Length: 259
Image (cartoon, rainbow, N blue to C red; front, side, top):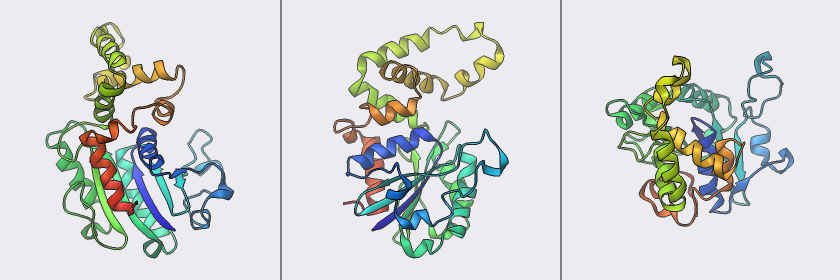
């Protein structure tokens, strides 16, 4: 069996990658007893609850996807700043990591700083303990063992986030709802709200996140966006051929040696 390990910023990334893996017949693992012993015996699965005594803290266990040939852990670390420490700790603590893992990678947003994709890639690479083992450009995959790569959304060159990609998908699968979401967001009287309620909306990616949220709320009312990403057609046989999705898909194929 081939093993892969990915570190991502949040749950939406997990679900988008999960949809691409599902198209390769690599499906989510629900029960611990069905998970490969390699992961069950690792420190990736917490032995204690609550984590660090915090009852409100999410249990930091990856989401696993698996079939007879592949077993892949996707680690949602809750934000960009947590990626380097999580990956460095995993490499140190996972028994026989380098001898067992086919590929390990990072998927993160470029955001909207100047030269966002380029700067984000180099910040991440330079913060890794084994930085010289990683490729020198975003989206590339090294030939080492394990293979390594860093994919910067939306396309390894432009500024943006996962939502940039999802809205492009929505143009093809949910065009009417996208139009309605854009109209709603455009006419929101944000200045009428208290300052603390404006903060997320006026952030660089705030409006894009709001549009994705509007569509997801129609498709899965009352549920989190990641439920819609998991269940609905944001990523399917049609949108997989969009350039950003195709690039991410190929990155996973190269990194994890998917057939």
